[in-house]
Amino acid sequence: MTEFDDALTLTDGRADLTDGWVIGEAVNGGLLMSLATKAAADALSAVDSHQDPVAFSTTFLAAAQPGQVRAETQVLRAGRSFSTAEVTLSQGDVACVRHTATFADLDANSEPVHLQEAPPELPDPEVCAPAARGGFAEKIRLLDRLDMRIDPLTVGWALGQPARDGEMRAWIRFADGREPDVLSLPFFLDAMPPVTFTFGALGWAPTIAFSGHVRSRPAPGWLRMRITTRNVIGGLFEEDAIIWDSRGHVVAQSRQLAGVRMPADSERGTRAPESA
Image 1 (cartoon, one colour):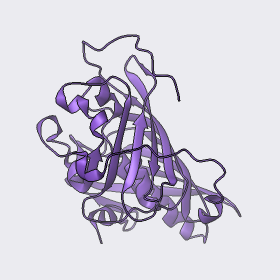
Image 2 (cartoon, one colour):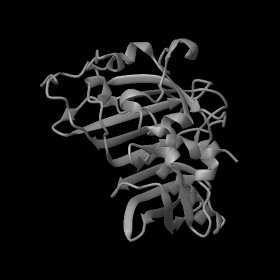
Image 3 (cartoon, rainbow, N blue to C red):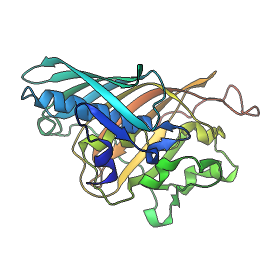
């Protein structure tokens, strides 16, 4: 059992979350999405239904703290091609997460590939910038669970030189050597620093709503990831993420709406780059 598998272990519908998965004071939302997906898969397994998540939608209602969390599940549909379950994660009397996931036979829905976005070109992991705790990231204990290597061309924000272009690219994997699988993809989709760091906004960016798709089983090895935003308006921004596996296959993608506190000297009215 790895740290990630321990975090996803449910006993009588309850899981214990350690402080090793926190960002600041709250448990990482990606871990909660993977936990809720596991709870949904368990509920569908009990009725002999699908086990591969292909889509999920998550609303974050309150920050989850380290400690015990309760998962309440309801099977909404157990069909021939697709099945759906809903999960609410709560602590005490407070609902923290509401998560709806649809499951199918992923192998039957990941081939053939008719059109697929090419992975970004990245330097080798050894020459990329490792993400580690220190300075403003001291309270991001989640980073100890990850081996993340950020493309030097997208890490200017860490040097006080934010590019303000709304894009970050990185290699990512578990620090303890656990290989990626389908259940880990919701976690990885929310594991990188917020893309608003590229604007110099180096604070917590709380997720409000998250929607993700699982497209294929990831092969062993490094995952390659790109996050982007094209609209940072007021105190909200969207973040789009795509993950490729070691074969160069798209394995997951997502969009989230999150809050942000932009720095006082942030440029206003900046136009996003034109799509290629």
